[in-house]
Length: 199
Image 1 (cartoon, one colour):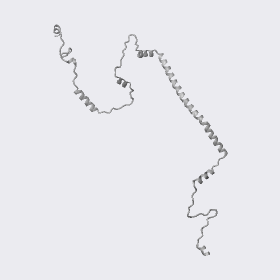
Image 2 (cartoon, helix red, strand yellow; image 1 turned 90 degrees about the horizontal axis):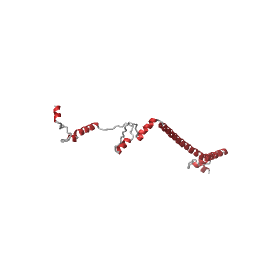
Image 3 (cartoon, one colour; image 1 turned 180 degrees about the vertical axis):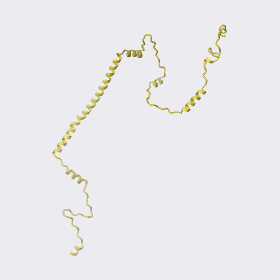
Image 4 (cartoon, helix red, strand yellow; image 1 turned 120 degrees about the vertical axis):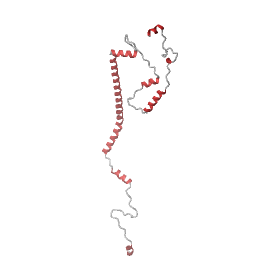
């Protein structure tokens, strides 16, 4: 027995306080569940903390509708103030209009423009706009304040203008045709004594 015990080596004993473990299997790390459980055990709620959390939740539940109503009322107040400001501007415009109608020169101008009245001895000329509808619409359009540059070949435009003017047919004037009553080629007929007196 002593020989057998001498041949078999003894396994090292684990230090006191730790259970012996097999070297063939590595030690398992602490799982997340155990870490989470340890963290939850570390949280301690006191009675004061619970009361404060309850008060906070109650305050949110109670004050949320009041805050929403307050925001809505502030928006309505802003809209009403904008409406009041617009009405005040309209009242001021009407007051200015009334003050202008108290001026005699303004009344005369309005009578001329709206009713086409004239003073005694004056002659009124009414200009009728006989332009086409498209031309009138173009004239009524707003003019842009931005400067625009039209890109074009001015040499070609000048050459086209010269060629068009040079190759255009001569205009026939009915007054210059032979036999016309106002033909400048034929001298006007005059009486005999008047012609002799001019000589």
